[in-house]
Amino acid sequence: MSFTLNKYVEPDFNQDFLKNAPDCKWEEAPLDGVAPRHYHALSIYPEYFKIDGNWVLAVESRMDTVPVIKSPTKVEIVEFRNLKKGDKVVVGRTEDASEGIYMYTHGFAQAGASGDTFAFRTGRSRETAFSKDYDELYEIMKYVKSVGEKITWVIGPSLVTDPEAKRAFASLVRKGYVDAILVGDSFASIDMAMDAFDETSERSFDMQKYDLISKIREAGSIKEAVEQGIVKEGGIMHALVKENKDYVLAGSIRDPYTLPDTVDNVYEAQDRMRKHTRKTGMLICLSTVLHTIASGNMTPSYNEFDGEIRPVFIYSIDLQEFSVNKLSDRGTLEVKTMVTNIQDFVNHLNNNL
Image (cartoon, rainbow, N blue to C red; front, side):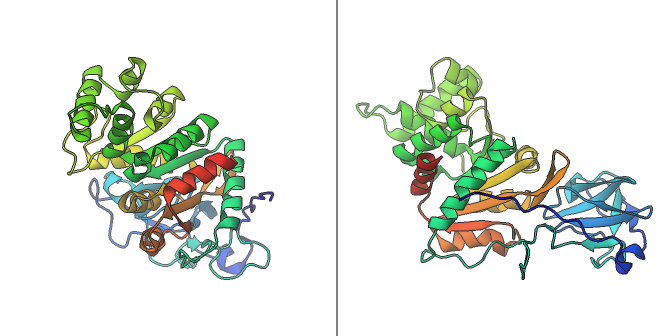
């Protein structure tokens, strides 16, 4: 099949209700991290704000954020906690242009399409046939890579417990289909420990893992440990370092012993993850419910690439229907779900890309 990107079509601003709409109103944030009363909370849909008589699109709109006017031609999307005292926060609770705020849901609608134009489909189950979805996914990934957009992955640690899946994902890294991974500390430590595991040793896997973490901490970073040969070839972290790809390791209150690259402060980890999700062309989430919800909520459903508004493709893959549908339940509508074993999923991708 041949993938064709739906072109974004702007609203007709000559319509009376848009042409005659008032400018949006704003109030200053009273304190750092405090929004004014009646703040306007953003959605995943494209939203326009009328400033000095002109409609301005807020690029990178995402969940749990507010619009801040930076200039007559720019609206910045800011998380509540990142607001600064004096920021010009748009106020108003309507989205029908009556307060200078317009939510637009038909930008990427196909000709003749009906219903919710951002939702791919809902209610996916293990009875769903995914062969067509795989074919479409291959083409989308090829397209995203060909236009220079980023492919970001959110992955649970279960992937690295399967040697074949590890090799397949490392192959995807080398092929250029992985630009960044957003994972927990355990993903990286298990991945590297599996390649260094000595079955003849009397020490358990966990103890050998802690031994390896100590060596990596002594080296100063995962990159240094790879260069010194402490981290063996064959794993995902080794491939990421060698291909100069990015990773964000988020710490957990459950972590007994963390890697030197691990970000222990939850807000700092969130900020580092958001640097990738805000600029990605595709987000693929594999078997990690909380990381998936967090990443999905901070990922725009559309973005501006090379001056063009394009959709951001979001996939959620898990063996449990509950897990894949959870992201949609939380409001991230621009997501396609597949109920399948993630090890099989990664192998299918590697074999067909």
